[in-house]
Length: 455
Image (cartoon, rainbow, N blue to C red; front, side, top):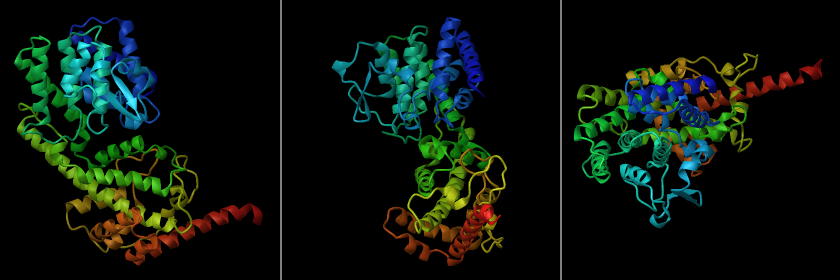
């Protein structure tokens, strides 16, 4: 969709939600709110966290969830590298920046603002606190913008329920003090309800947390996608958001692409399924929740092996590229992406067909090899969907040997092992195949370059 289509759909959702909640907002004000949301969500670095994402996360059945989803990713400092200028009006009175870190202002520097204090309480944050991108910074600031934007039109009780949904999208949090994140939120909502005399019945507070959990689970819903190819598509959409050099496929280096993969591989190895999805008061029901956990576990296992195998491939390419430079574009090694269908040769064109010496031993290996050979669901703007070189490596070496050598690859990344020492530890058949194929690719470029001279 383009900006106008996104704006219209956002406008439609705002109109529907405000009517469902019987909130009176003029068409002019609704249009301004839609513009703030869509302009922010269509920033130059947004690949995954886009208008499509917030429309999907909100669903279409519950007005509170629809509204919360529209606002929940407005601030994403790691992606945008800043806070969108249009949002600073709502944030600056409460937040200050010190040496590239954001802090909640000290108590004596904060304005008297009950709504801001309520947002603080819902998140369990305090005046003077440093905000962390990995512990709710973006969600807190998005909730603050949401609260201040809606303040002229919405009651405190409705805003409390909306920002509760946004708080619950802080991802991948373990239990603390014997309570789940959702249970902690419920306790804070009860305290805020009492402090601000909102008189929300307890059943409604429980329902508010259930709404929040339902929306938050949709936010990470790709982890439970029955198609691992689609799950990996979403993962590949996330990579350029925090690795901005990937935006230009012709210029990002072997090292830059490897670093992007390495960060994602580290994240997948940290992640546990029970950190992905949440449950509160039978939302979702036990059987559905267990299904989410099982699908997430499966997709995470697939991602670990898939990304780890690709990371090993990049280690070999990076070690070889060190023979003639430190900042070699990946397109120099692999060949350029070719969206126009031109006759441009690539490294994969020179790879030999090899038999599979290591047939898959289980469904996991079978599925990952299929993903490597046939590809993720779709190509991305910066990468092809299949992995011919990694496929060849798996067929020649097997997954076990790749897993074994990945530790040495990481020593190479840390410069604790030289590139040549790492290559010497690898299967020499693989090293020879790649060097020969690269040499043929370079020869073909030389031939193309010399054509004009020869004629």
